[in-house]
Amino acid sequence: MAVSIGIDALLERVRAGLDRLDPRTAHAAWRAGDALLVDTRYAALRERDGLVPGALVVERNELEWRLDPLGSHRAPEADSHDLRIVVLCNEGYASSLAAESLRRLGLHRATDVIGGFQAWKAAGLPVLLPTPRPEEGPVDPTH
Image 1 (cartoon, helix red, strand yellow):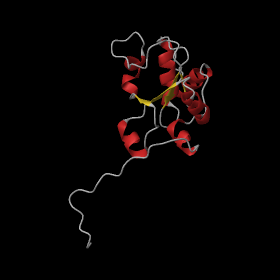
Image 2 (spheres, one colour):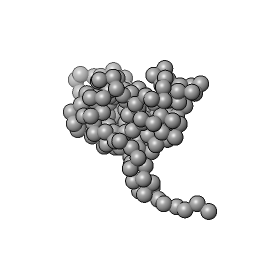
Image 3 (tube, helix red, strand yellow):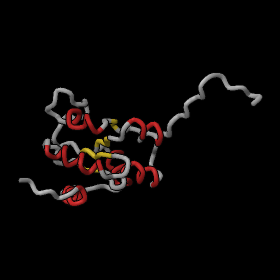
Image 4 (cartoon, one colour):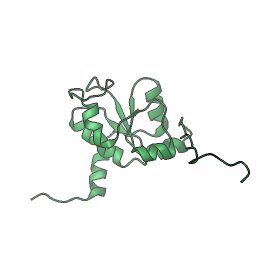
């Protein structure tokens, strides 16, 4: 019978094995060409909060298939098990679990951003803000 440890204990255990990056360090690694930044936030969050320019967008449910260098559905960027992948979620929780999953595929340099997109944005790092959607129908300037 499996022993239940709970999500908090699991997250602590997973993070102990990761070399997590603060947003500025992640940005510097990406700019230096030493990391592939992967945004796993779902579409509604990206539409609400914006995008990190240059990040590869791969929603969480596709992550392993898109980043496995041996996979038939891999992204072109996922060409080596030595690739340093830095996962970015909204607040830095799901990204830790995602990085651990990538490590299980042999992507031994996978890690995540402490605090996720929200910390990235708070640090003043580049974000492409969402474009407001036009109102339905024509606008009446007299009202």
